Image (cartoon, rainbow, N blue to C red; front, side):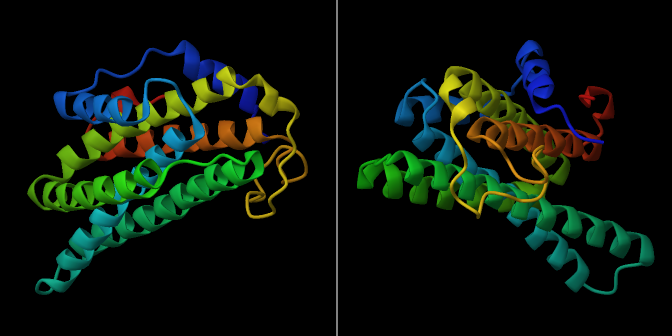
Length: 221
């Protein structure tokens, strides 16, 4: 069944944001300080740069679990399930990053070396260290924080589409962005739909994180 991406965008924007914890609020405040409150393509790229990192940390944790002794069938099955989900989510977040990067190329958007390379690199390194430690200390806390991050990402992406109505009429020139899920015969007829699809992906990531951390009642349909 085809997904009505416009309808999903409006559903996101009509839904209040989740109640973010202190750590999540500090992360989002830092993004605003470095990139401004306005949602721009460089800020979207920074967001997607960080989005893959927790899934990588969880993958590392599961390899450690599988390699430490001889796990029983239940433990092994759980670890392999998380591994599969983490890899799939990483690939999906990478597609988001590719999409934002290709949009920047198409628009001729340029950013300074400091904000385009240095800040994201240092932020990613720090976030990777933190994510790995949190995953080993409390994987459920890691999933809960990720749910808040993904809720924020979903709302930011959908708001970005609303703030840039010109994208409704902008064709997608990069073949790397078409992934077979678009409403136009598996392709995306506009950049607006590409970003809407990315926003909906973030909701799905949030929902899975909520289920895993024991907050299934918070899942968004």
